[in-house]
Length: 105
Length: 160
Image (cartoon, rainbow over all chains, first blue to last red; front, side):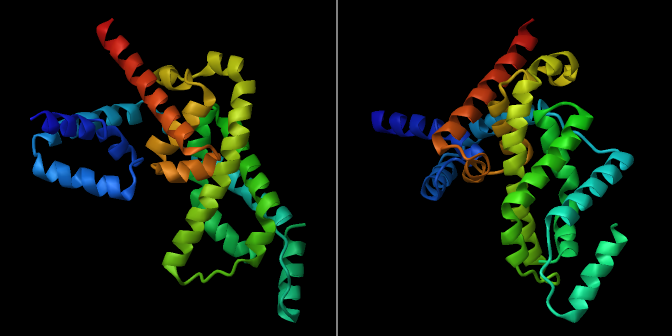
């Protein structure tokens, strides 16, 4: 009986790490096997899942307006254009790069 | 990789990058700037690797893998710059922080960063370790602290 309790509390301590994804693969498999053989354990997992849902709701989810999205994408394109240089691979590539350079003047 | 291929990889990430930046600094313009600065830092550091990388635009799987790699790479620099900037802007943030998210923005920047990566972006602890360049025990400790503080705040609200 004592052994069972020790086992139970050890797995109880693993609920949050399990939901957090911080258990190793072996520990995760062991935990899932334990849950399968202890259906009453599922309610405790459910409680922790609810807790995590509450935490998620406390983190802001910001959305970009259409104008902001356009402006940020233009800046991102400019950054990529300025910082990422292409190595031309042949005559057509040289012409293409020159053409892009001319368009982005 | 050509520039236009890199555009195709990065542009669909704009919304996610902005959303992440906003969890560090609750200001529209500052968050936009943070995304650009993170991208610039990533490009400066990784441009040789990007230029060498071959990409098959027809392979969805390859695109997904590369996009995730680039996403994590940019997040790494946004995290680094964002945490420093967030500490500098602390006083200004106290005045402008969105009321509904006060408990979250009251967390220290590194805790906020890890909480956002774990619970909003849904990264695993291993991935967070890689993005924020922190040892695993520190990532886990920060997740636990953040969760404890947020839930504590919520319970206080309920009992009051």
